[in-house]
Length: 266
Image 1 (cartoon, rainbow, N blue to C red):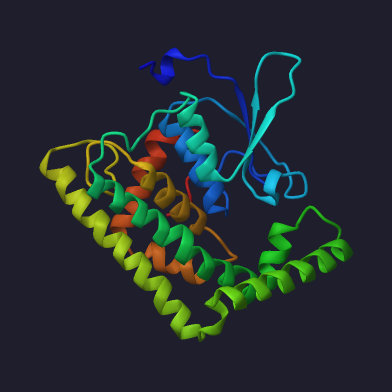
Image 2: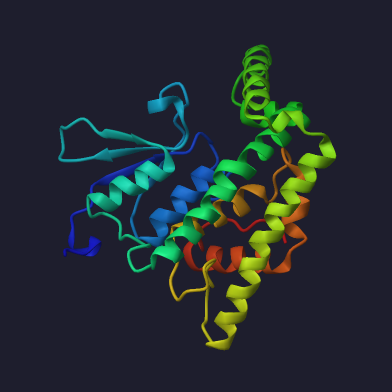
């Protein structure tokens, strides 16, 4: 089988939805995709882009530029982008060597964050801290445009969260659920770090406790990085910072794979 390093990788442009460069952003899925590309050693450019131009209306999305003169192919959804790049041979399949049980654990960790915690974080940002979220997410817009676009986003998000069910919980119930998720992530990382120390492994340790990262690590790091120094979600930031092992896990990955990026405030 041809390895990714032996394949001519096309020019990739990741659209993050944020004008910020040289630091992690508030979107866990943008951070996740960046992490996945860096774990694979793939070079890419970052541009701002827009949900209005994005395929499927989702951030992040990726331009894959082939030969000069051809129209770039646009890929959407962080998981589907990774799956496509793996299928095309541009990225190594991080889960190829896992047992069926390990694959299930990996998927379970990703689902816990992407399909459960995510909705509680959307509630915290767009409902509990609406004005801060609006003025950060839509900062490039004039105030009167920001006012109306923000109102539309608020109403749409509220309806979505009511249908999904997250908005039907009390503030305390929502906070306790977020805490429970991070407590379990921390428990996995504590076990993984202990195992890494026992084998005298330097550098990052990984969520499943193996010698190499899996797909879940990109997701976990993406959510941690999005939570730190995030005024839109102060409760989540406080929770994450309360776990020293989670912070150690994120710092190690940042130092090895994102040394060119600004580190969050310690």
